[in-house]
Image (cartoon, rainbow, N blue to C red; front, side, top):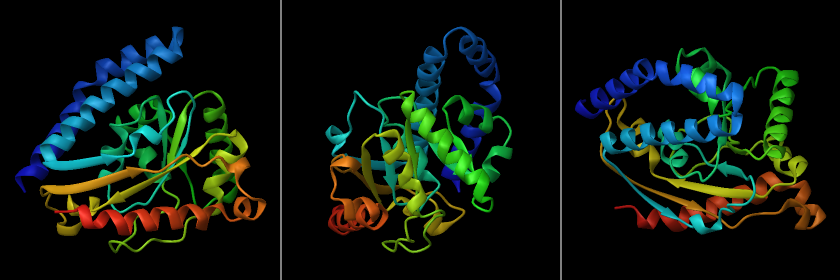
Amino acid sequence: MIRLILVGGFVILFLILSIPLMIAEWIIGKFNPDIKSRSSLAIVNWAFRCVRFLAGTKVDYIGEENVPRDTPVLYIGNHRSFFDIVLTYVRVPRPTGYIAKKSIEKVPLLNVWMRNLHCLFLDRENIKAGMQTILAAIDLMKNGKSICIFPEGSRSKEEGKFLPFHEGSFKIAAKADCPIIPMTIVNSAAVFENQFPKIRKAHVVIEYGKPIYVKELPKEQQKQLAPYVQNIIAETYNRNKELIH
């Protein structure tokens, strides 16, 4: 429970003590939104690195050279843990918005930082609102921001078992004409979910696959993007689970 107290205490203190930074970021955004995006990225990256350290999580990052630095990308990842966001966000090379559940938008202070980072809140129960979120993500990518989405819709309850990837997630890359980066996360639930409410030391492997350019795929694969990318992530997962120790 000590790690849970350390992590929880740090997060609460960060959110409270960063209120002056939120105000400063708001002022900066009025004059230079790009500087605001990059400074918010740096601040939250620092906070997430602290969380990773306090949780005692060792992470092997593989294939980061596959992530283009000169263009926004759509990260598509499997999802098992709350820590998936923490462990992946610290490695993004440019401002990146994560698509999160609508309910998270109600968390005070956290929601301010998420908006600063171009995160979007998806209401899966409202088809019209969901489509508006997808359109907003496309606009962000066209304006140089990367997007990360976990297309299973919710966290899988069993290690190595994936929920079906929703096709709608992939429309973002197709419409924005940006590459998809498959992001395979192995063993992240060992940090927290496997022994809830305790946080324990864990070894996690995250691999970034080669970029997928939708328009370069055969027409049939373009129509079946979700299972195509899911198969890539599943194959990578089965290979990398042998690296866990």
